[in-house]
Amino acid sequence: MPEPPPTSPGERPDAGRDRVPTGVELTALDSTFRADPYPVLARLREREPVHYDAVIGRWVLTRQVDVDRLLHDRTLSVDPRKANEGTYMRIFERFGDFSMLFQDPPDHTRLRSLVSKAFTSRAVDRLAPRIVEISEELLSAVATAERFDVIDTLAGPLPVIVIAEMLGVDPSDRRDFKRWSDAQAMGLNPLLTEDERTWLEEQDAELETYLRSTIADRRARPRDDLISAMITAHEGGDQLTEREIVTMCELLLAAGNVTTTDLIGNGVWLLLRHPEQLSKLRDDPSLIANTVEEILRLESPVVQTARIAVTDMTAGGCPVRHGESILASLAGANRDPAVFPEPDRFDITRRDVHHFAFGGGAHYCLGAPLARLEAQLAITTLLRRFPSLRLADEPLEWRALPAFRGLVRLPVIVAA
Ligand code: HEM
Figure 1 (cartoon, rainbow, N blue to C red):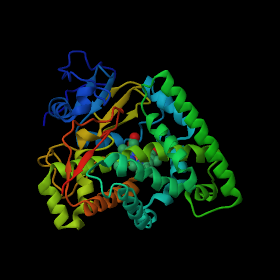
Figure 2 (tube, protein in one colour):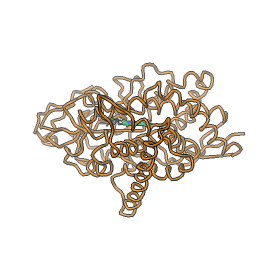
Figure 3 (tube, rainbow, N blue to C red):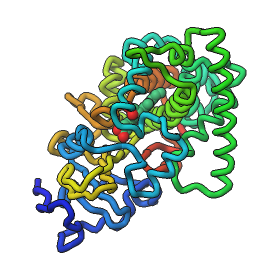
Figure 4 (cartoon, rainbow, N blue to C red):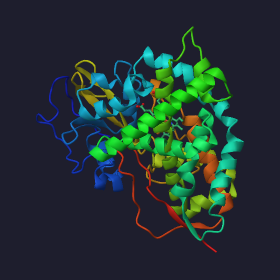
């Protein structure tokens, strides 16, 4: 593996450097990258693992060792107010000052500790029977169908229903909640039209009104749900404000729904494309936990994240200036041959699948246990209910959301 060329803080990356032109914009908004990001990530990892990309104006890291170091570097920030870049600011505007995804310690530590109890493996494991029940109900709608769309039927609705029930949303409000939740996901796209932006603002306002009235109701009549738990959560004499609870709910919807949908969709797609792996799983259903880890590694629903330099410094091998951001390619790290032999091969019995699909460091995905459990149970239920599924012969369409990777549709045929 070649070492990155030596650079020092302040030296411009394009000054005399042997740059690797990628020929594509390194985001899912680019149709070539969206269709297949892996060849360009492999080329970068091999030839210029610490890469300055003039098209997106950012540093890009693709090796696991560099991504790991970057995500654990506590001198870097996630606060968009410290970045000198447009897209960061736009996403930030939607989530306000209080989303912990965009906060550094000590504010981040405080917010995270006030909700983390609800998302531990132990806490989410008790949701298992209900997750199976919801999966069964959703699949019953296509019980006699000859073909159906896995995203539309199962992978899309399941995470929204689960989080709605966790929060304590009444079943009669489910339909509105799904629309508000879709809007949160759409808000992750920085390139919206004026009409989309207006629609989104309307949905945000409706969701906020709904959450505030639910919070008022739970203050008066607490229930066994996450909103009541957030109201009463105490940590070192501290509590969440109403504004923080609203933002936390919005963050859970934005961070947890489309990602889990994509994990289930990408997983079913991979299994149906690899019949030998699928039959291994059918023969030994206890392989499902490792299968989901391998899906997370090979088709990571979140392909990248970023950190911001708060001074001129060298981070992850990049000479960054104050306000510049460094992109960590999680998808690149997850196919690093230095860590994973034959990294492009789908192998559900692969050992030690230590991937970066859920990030790393202080912002490691809060919902990882929940996402894992939902994917394991949804895929198991689907395969049990439909033992002879196959992919419909239709062109694939990948989601055009930057930083995400998932299928818009996954049509399948129920073979006789
Ligand atoms: C397969 C599904 C999921 C994937 C791939 C995923 C991925 C990620 C990644 C990569 C991060 C770190 C971002 C960074 O470091 O910049 C993250 C953070 C986060 N995720 Fe997930 N996520 C998933 C599901 C969920 C679910 C189900 C929830 C909750 C319902 C959730 C809630 C969060 C939250 C709250 C954060 C911010 C944590 C913090 O800032 O401390 N995620 N997720």
